[in-house]
Amino acid sequence: MTTAVEKPRRLMPRWRDYGRPRELVVRYLLLLLVLGITVGPLLWQLLASLKGTGEDVFGANATLLPHDPTLRAYRQVFDQVPVATYIRNSMIVVILSITSQLVFSTTAGYMLSKPGWKGRKAVWVVLVASMMFPFESIMVSLFLSIRDLGLVDSLAGVWLPGFVGAINVLLMRGAFLAVPREIEDSAMLDGANEWQRFRHLYLPSAWGAIMVVVINTFISAWDDFLWPLIVLRSESHMTLTLGLSRLQSSSFGYDQRVVMAGSVISIIPVLVLFVITQRWFYRGVSSGAVKL
Amino acid sequence: MVATQTAEPVSVPGAGRTAAAPGPAPSRIRRFARAVLPGPAPGANGAALYRRWWLPWLWTAPAIVCAVVFGVFPFFNTVLLSFTDAKPLGGAASFVGLDNYTRMVDDSDFWLATRNSVLYAIVVVPLMVLLPLMLAVLVEKNLPGIGFFRSAFYTPVLASSVVVGLSWQWLLADDGLVNTWLRKAHLIRSAIPFLSDSWLILFCAMGLTLWKGLGWYMVFYLAALGNVPKELHEAASMDGAGAVRRFWHITMPGVRQAMMLVGTLTGIGSLRVFTEIYMLGSSTGGPGGADRTLPFYIRDVGLDPITGNAGYGSAVSVALFALTLGLTLLAQRLTKEDEA
Image 1: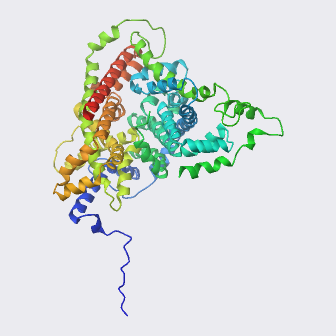
Image 2 (image 1 turned 45 degrees about the vertical axis):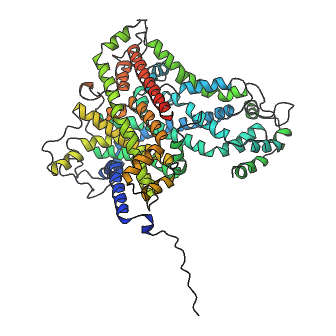
Image 3 (image 1 turned 135 degrees about the horizontal axis):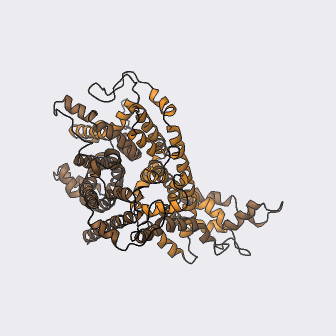
């Protein structure tokens, strides 16, 4: 009895399904080249931070890989230099910014997405106008305002201009506008009042946009340099970026391995956030063009 | 799909909660919440939009205040300040008319900073429009492991400018990796002064900007590439068009709009460069401040606690704004012509 054995369909594609071998080789070589260029400098920093004091970081004798990897530099980062303080300060600014941005961009975005009140057009105009001026061209005046508020050299002064961004309000407004009218109607028929509709219908529907606000706020607050540089003066108030740049330029004999360890530490939170939220991360980039 | 996700929880809390709440008198927090949160208007059913007319204003007030106080007002204030001699740390300021502007016209350092900023835009914009697009084409095809490469190319975006600045600073130092390798390969005898020659600093900073922006705009282009019809590529390669020609004649026209947008964004971004120069050219902005960009110069002349003159800094800020505005209008004009 001979039956034609049906060959099971392959689930995994074979290499040749991806194209001609020569093209594939060229593609991967190019990918590896770009990988070296983009990740190389950061990887080198990571490797150098693992070197002990006996190994050169610079000069002709420096090797790429540490012979005897050690976490000494990471311990010293917290013992010798006030990196722990810097991280705490950066965290304070990040948490304050995310909280205020989230609360007030959702509330304002929600109201702007709702018809039925006079003046919403004017509010919209004000918000859009506020995005027209590049930060660098208004920072002198901003600093004078912060000075008049008595917030020079304080973390509140770093946080306040990023209290709630117009871009985030418009982003949330767009997300709320996308909620179908019929769902809200049916929620109303079920007797949900407006707060309940906001809380249980609008906020969950706008989850993606909320993540984008969180991610953007985290990165901009964590990585910001110019504004903290203008506002902060004393060592104990410095944020991480500011502290790292000061460590590097300061005259006292510092150990490069320690500064490198500090920079590696500074990347970790953003990297973790990136891995967790990758799905929304890319969406955040493409939503750069907010529907006005 | 949205419907099934969201409609369900709505019906759970339902009507009962607000209608009749017998029991202890509402706490102060509860009363405050009731005043601040939108609920049913008194005497109306749940369909009424707002409880009180000022509720929308209350909910939008923080955003309005922030936009006005930290967005709109500072601009007008900057224009006003540019006619005064205000000091960054306070004290009496007096009206000086157009003095700041006449000083600016004769200020060779101002023109140097303007030149650096404009040059920055001229060099960075074309490269930043093209290189990420080529990279996006490279990672567009779903090959095994492509997700890893995409994420890896994105890491420079995640690191702060200070961290990548530090990294480059060490790589480019006289005894840094680049010089050491070049010397070992016997390509050079003495170290290339990447971090002490003003032109090299400027170009290295541009390289840093490009390197850091590559992943960001790659993702941007990836989204745009999805809209280019695959059939066009297939038809073209059937007709014998090579990768280069397909890139030139199919990919580029297909993502034209995205390219215009990237050009505008990077143009504006180039005028805002500060950290790259600060990290590679030290806090002076290159030898003798030769690499200062406009934002760098604004900070130097306007915000220095001792020698700063916020009035003059504001005048330079107005110039920077005018330059940005000019660039934006130019980009708009080009985009419109392009569409026509």
